[in-house]
Image (cartoon, rainbow, N blue to C red; front, side, top):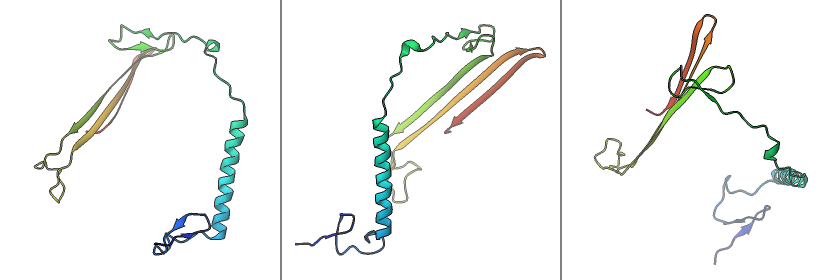
Length: 145
């Protein structure tokens, strides 16, 4: 039969596991832990005591649908009346495969690893007419290969 000890926090500790990682808490650290726990519980109770207000969807203003900008090309829309025409595009790619022993990515031990990967890209193209002529802003953000 093995004996277990109870440390000041109340957690069972095996007597053969000693050292800095298995040592019991000092009284100062235990008091600090109890104080932090009490503060978290008090904040949770205070939040639960406040009344909850549901959002009434009938009170919200009706959003206007974006206008199409056919003169700029396919996919361009105007979100605000008289504002710039914007096109948001992108792509997502996911790759999953089975382990292949002869694959160059195999580990030093010769064990095959599965192929898991992904990439994504988003592009925002904004065009508008100014007094100096057309102005265009284009940004593309991507990750992966």
